[in-house]
Length: 144
Image (cartoon, rainbow, N blue to C red; front, side, top):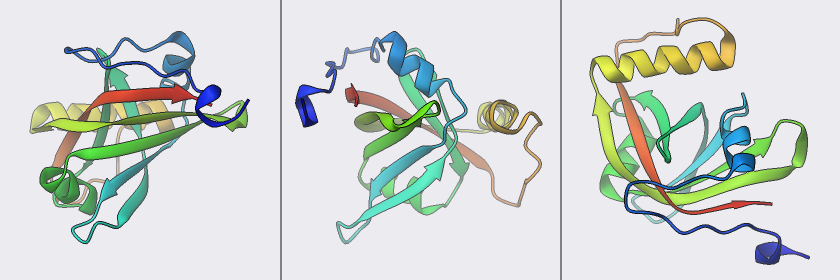
């Protein structure tokens, strides 16, 4: 079996997506996600990101003004690829749209939560830029 035959495809629900156990396990691991957004000229922009899942939505935290934030405000379509940490030939893909941009104290708390997940410590790379959470509503999810 190849391609879509191997994928477990799910339909999006109105309030987010009910993610299967194998998808949640990879999303909750310490694997980086690779986020693809659309540049103004239509070309892809891909960047590694820390992420988590809450209530069927994927959350990515970045500094306000970064390319991924600017791109999603103009065109909210995104795609994520998250490798399985125990098998690099297996991965989750998520296609969806950014439906909310969360700033302020909630975004600051979120980056600390992600830093603890990925490094074991609170976020210590603060710069002058405030943080923003890109809240992605999955439209299609698969495990290959």
